Image 1 (cartoon, rainbow, N blue to C red):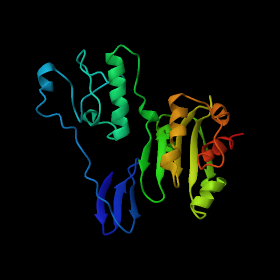
Image 2: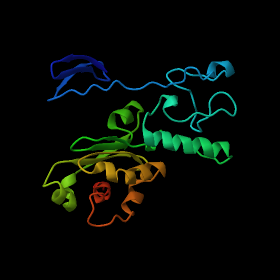
Image 3: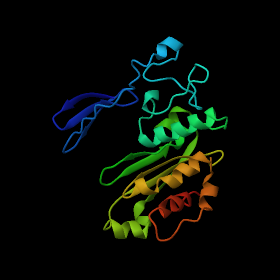
Image 4: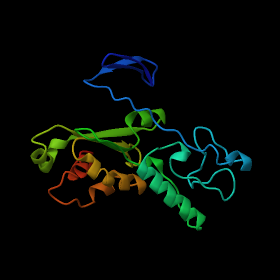
Length: 219
């Protein structure tokens, strides 16, 4: 968490409790959002809420037949998350078995170059005591990436479970990773292994091929 700002330097505390610093040309302050649930009378029917309305992976609250979706859940405040939560809620209301998988929800930072990721990071995998392997490949392995970014730099990283070779997470730096992270989302949603990911045919030449090429770096 951020503990202070010194000019153009942000002082923060890492997960291990150590004080770290990172500097930049500019500092963007994002104030964040809160679930707007006041005045709805949820407390009158006993719906539990803390930072947001508490729901399970079917978007059900603790009160039968009451569902919640979107930013009011206070979990993943993203437009595409809210859209999927709405689908899950409606499907379950209609009697269709559907569940929310937050590990398959991508996150994107629209900077230049872009950053995108889905699934577990190395730190999260370690915290869960998961034995994993990290596959890395420079984005320059994609000829189209090199051509469209005038060389440019970037990386594709895949977190793989050692025992079953399941795809746990995919993280990318480089343009246009926001447009190609979907392949990784499908891999995690469908609980694919690296071997299955290798069998997927990607069109050539595309930047998205870097995901498959990275998978092939596992021997």
